[in-house]
Each structure stands twice: as C-alpha cells, then as structure tokens.
Length: 324
Image (cartoon, rainbow, N blue to C red; front, top):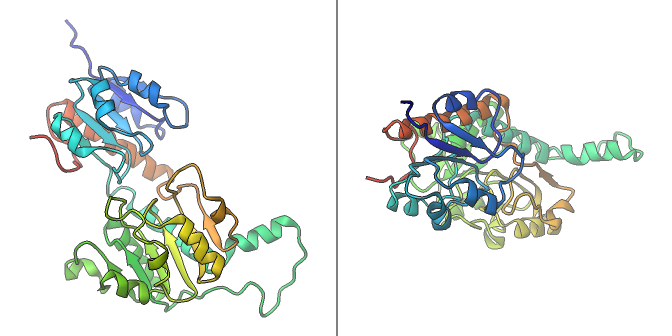
C-alpha cells in the first residue's frame, strides 16, 4: 500500500528548477499567479497542509495556523526576514519556522552598492533627462554628484549583508563604522569601528541600512534620526520599514539629504507619492536578491527545510523559538 505523501502549499511560483525535488516527495500545490495569494484563498488552500512555503507578503498568524489544522509541521519562509510570521504562535502549536539566510548575502550587497552609486552620482536623474528628450550639454557644473572614494561609510545592521557591504567598501578606500545590536568579534569587524547609533549617524555622510525589521527597528530612522546625518548625506535603505519613508521624502525635499535610494517599501507594492516625486530618490522594486542564482538558492534552501522537517528532522536554517 502506497504511503500518503505530505501535502505542501507553495504560495508563489519559484525560480526554475526548484520545485521538482519537492514534488518528488510531496503533494505540492502552487499558487501560480505571480502576485500575493489572496487571504481567503490562502486560508482555504492551507487546510490539511503539512508544510507551507511562504513569502513576506503571507501573514502567518493564529488564524492561518488554525485554518491549516494540527497536521502543519513547518512554515518555510522564502526570505531572510520573517516579520510576517508569528514565530511564538507557531512554536506553541509545534510548528517549525525556517528562513533562507546566507544564500542572498552577496547579491543583496551588490544591489546596495548599485543603489549607492546611482544615488551618489545622480544616475537616475541623468537617465531620465536623456530619455525625456530635453536638450542638454556637458558643462563643468553639470549634474555634480558625491564622490565616494575615501568617504566615511556607516552601516546600520552588521549582519551577513552588512559585512558584505563593508567588504566592498575596501575597494573604494572608504573607512567603515557600524551600529549593531551587539558588537562583532574583532575578526568579523574587518577593521570597521562600532559606534553608538547617534554617533554613527552624526559621522556618516553615507549610510547603508541593512538591519532586519522588528518591533524595535520599525521607523528606527524617523525624522529626528535622519536629521542627525551630516548635511548633504546619502542614505540607502535595503530593509522595508526601518526608515520612515515620509520622513525620508521630507529630508530630500528640504535638501537635508543629498540623495537616497530604497530597494523595498513598507507597504509594497505601494510607494509613497512623496518619494516618487523626488528627483534625488533612486527607487527599486525589491531587487536585492533578484538574480537567477540567488533565487534558485533561496528556493532550494526553503525546500531543504521542508524536506528535513517532513522527514522527522529539524530545519536546516531554523528561526527561534522552535517547538521542543
């Protein structure tokens, strides 16, 4: 008699080549539309699932856990962040939670530098000027930007991605300071200097934000803290919700900031109109990990986590707290 294969719900299409391995071991249902799974549809589709592969736009809470039923064993989040998952509620029901750290570090750090260079050198403005067909001519004062070589770089959040951003700064001769929940071991610091947050802001003409979103970091950079940056600073945000987007637009509007760049937004896919109106804002539609290799690695790690738990083991990359 053939054993029943565990049911797994995947809430988004994944990168090519990721799902066949999961489908070989499980009964897989995939939400095929390339957009967030409607809540009502999600609550219906998750019933009886043993595994759930989610993205950041899927809220995993008591309502969803109750809809899934007692057979749910793992929520595998296709992201490093997991602010969409009530981890404590999952643990209370014996449901493991995993994420996908590490595999997207380098691509996200690359994107942070792409945004930083584009903002500092006014690349978005320049491209829009050319595409608009407006007349222009080179001049010694035409579209002057900020030179990054040798400029102090501040990093808020010195985890894997922050450290990868810092490694790239060496090529530009930029001294690095950082603020983190804990000071890193000297070997991890790579010569970077830990500073209290207020000091970091005051000493960072260039600031890259990579810390994860949590209750403690939501709008950590509000109007007051953005105002602590040196006049004419460049701010790059790689984490939705840490920087107050309305305050960021106001700082650009007043000229307090030279430029800013944002890769993902607090209420995606909505982007504040005040930011869209800013010529000195470089805006990207959440592209930090958007390479084929990285998305395949993220999907593969999510599948590894699912298969490990459904086989009776523990997640490869667990999120705490886990069920005992």
